[in-house]
Image 1 (cartoon, rainbow, N blue to C red):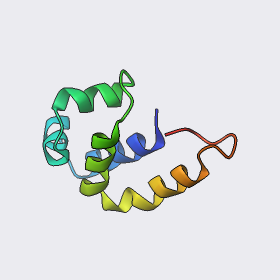
Image 2: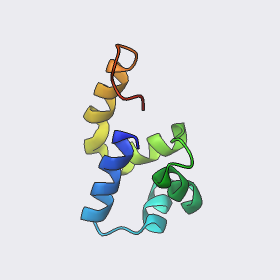
Image 3: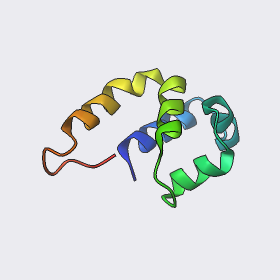
Image 4: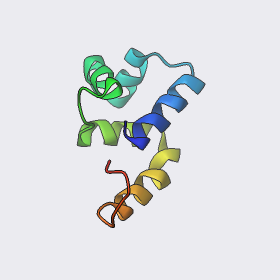
Length: 77
């Protein structure tokens, strides 16, 4: 699973948000969020944008992963 998604799920649980509540805050369909969380779908731009809007504290983690992408061995997000 993508590190960004894992971090978002942790914050979702900490804030006591259901998947449906979080999806609404992100501006996406709840089924999309469910599919991303289960690994059936990769997070697209709209999902990533929504996560970073709801959980801005994830921005540094996301930017570090994007910067490292392609330098060898890092997890692809």
